[in-house]
Length: 488
Image (cartoon, rainbow, N blue to C red; front, side, top):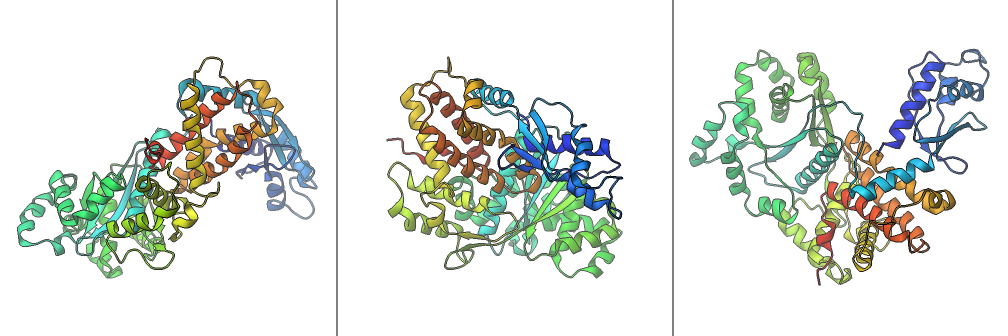
């Protein structure tokens, strides 16, 4: 499947650049009435390059749009391109493409995305806790985000790894630990070491076990960032200069982490707390050594709060157990309470943009509406029951082209399903799974509108298609939807 918005943006941008001496990029938005998507790039070009009353010798955006319109290349996605009254470039998708894309998912029973992203390695560096302070829900958010981003990138063919960086291992360790950790400081590559992993696991006990098993996260690569600091400061020509710039120790970690990983990866994302001035730090580090920051970006995360109090003043396993107990009364019997609450917590955390504070309110998340976790999981439950009861067979279950052509609501659902690759691309490029959560909620609503009147011969096919998409979306955000449903 192709990422529709990404592909149309590229086609229209190229058409504009052929027509006019500009490098401006088009931005597609969904159309309202007479088309599926629209772009206002003609108006943008007209007003950006306007001199007096004209732009490139033309008097209004409508005339600018004429030049773009004639240069849009034919493509399997496009049925027709038109120009709106104010010069908007309007695109109607090909019904044949929609039919072929859905039936491809139906026949393969999996979602495949055609990625135009060049092959590159990608590393996510997570700021783990200090050993003397312990894990917080901020770190849970880091882990959930990094795992969802790895799965997005995996679908796009981008090799991705993540590292959990613990601080103050030297300060916190006891004399009996010192020999073990000193042996690990010989070279950066030795920090991915089962001994260090075991050391961290033993130190955090219940909380670490809870993350890996109860929340089904996977912590495999663990580094001690201050050991990186010890190694690099000894050999750094700029260590005195760096120390003069900053008093905060984590900045030194930042530089040494960047130096350690910069050679092995083409793209590095370092996740930091909301209050850390990452932009200013990057700016100063760039002045010291530009090569360190060439492929390094930082992403800030907000805190995680409850409706009535901060959550990170209690151990993680106690906080999450509290949510289980508080939510039991309004969980339908068809769901497993523990699995549903854990999944709802993941969903509510990932639904927020990465830079915003998360307000955990499970009453809102589990509200019986499509605009919550309950909507997509209820649709998934409905699909599971229908497919199991109907003994789905692939034979004669394809979605005919004429059905998409003749049903407005079915066509809207088909478009939303085919926008799944865009949700994956947007999540990956913005380091935020909110786009996938938004896609799940929107598609749930569209499906429930269509399901009530689908022809009985077509219904199983569409149910299987939606089920396949939802399974993949839930998998990316770390939810095993089948385990949420009771087995008896």
